[in-house]
Length: 197
Image 1: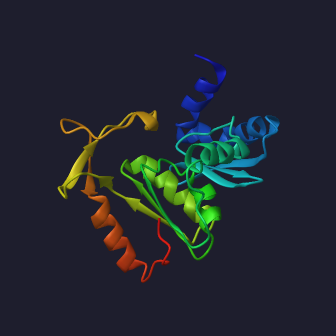
Image 2: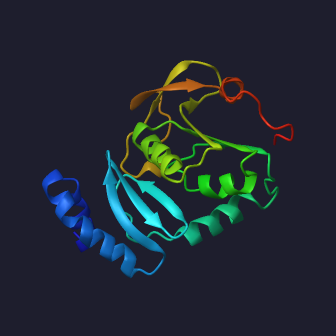
């Protein structure tokens, strides 16, 4: 087992976690990618960086927020670049890798609706929005389905990008259609900007 994997396994043990946090922060800073500090908050590892905060279910010592922003722009802004005041719906938002990029693009008049089904992944998304004070980001813990079924099952892999809806096994999570989520979110947020995309 590589050194970093052994250390991550120890970090899951409460007694070792607080003793190893300074080492994790040092390793992340030594990568020279803008990470200043790594700390633990309620089951989520928070990474304080020059470009904002990032939340993950384990320490991410190879974190590079500038590269993450560059990838988000390359993958999502090639056909349309969100403008100030736009509304972006990020379905399967994960831990919020693109949330900062979207939030900055739509500005304070816009909204970013981040929908994530998996509970552990959603907690990271919530922490990211909280620590970065993203008032224009609305995290929603829900699965998106074709019909409003109320509940869906999502797989529970540690590699959160592999988690998919699975009708046979997994964790039950609330579910709805995109139209339902949008209308509920729009009414909860009072009013959305006119130039919604």
